Image (cartoon, rainbow, N blue to C red):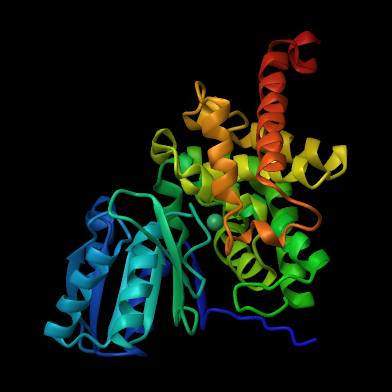
Length: 371
Ligand SMILES: [Zn+2]
């Protein structure tokens, strides 16, 4: 059996890492197209000033990683003869930078200012329609040349981003484990390595150990060792774990959920958390494992019911349509071991929602309050 594992070229993380950005870019090319999320423009402006070694062409990101936006940015980079693309902001700006650099045939530097997804490190861009529905995966020939994460910026972002990133990272080990058992292909089309499965497990263990403390640090807008651990888990470990370990049902359910308009205002990791809970029931994980995952979600504030992702009034008919969308040929639901049908996915979603609602109803008589 031939296994394949892929990595970003460099991973730079820490409070103040932005001070190294120009130096990292200059190693690749003297002129950079910087694609920047509006929300971080003022935070990063000081680090995008021309130096002797590198100059910047700055473009605001439109907000959606779609073909129209990629074509627009490619045209700008061509006209300005940029030799490297830098994506600064959230997951969608990262994916847009990767897709644009690929079309141009130039290196890419990703600067996540949020730890809200595991997109930054991967050789993958998720392309959406201009209306925000999942369109397709764009598999790239290599991972980003540099991923640079300034944890001081992450700590200043609203806590919901960090929590959503933990939702995305929560799926990593479970989905990699499904792929390992089934010997299913990872994102390279080959089977994953021991290294990838090991990193996926480290991702999970890090979440369980440091998730609540990292949330508290982010609420206080400070960088602590726990926050550093979770940023690394959300960004690097989850990225390596999903990409070289493989995806299964949690992300397929996420993709299914995006067919319902009401879920569009909820974030990738929040829907992946719901997908993960349903996957655990679908695959008959041990009750202790399921309880640990729900406890974690509750402790850090991830959704555990359909109502919490906008689907409080969803009909069975529409939820079955979600399950059918999660099972379409070519999606990663087919990496789940055992028999999987849309009916079973539907049942898992209903059961996961019922389990979450039961927990919320029990909250007022938790042992701490009763004591
Ligand atoms: Zn994800």
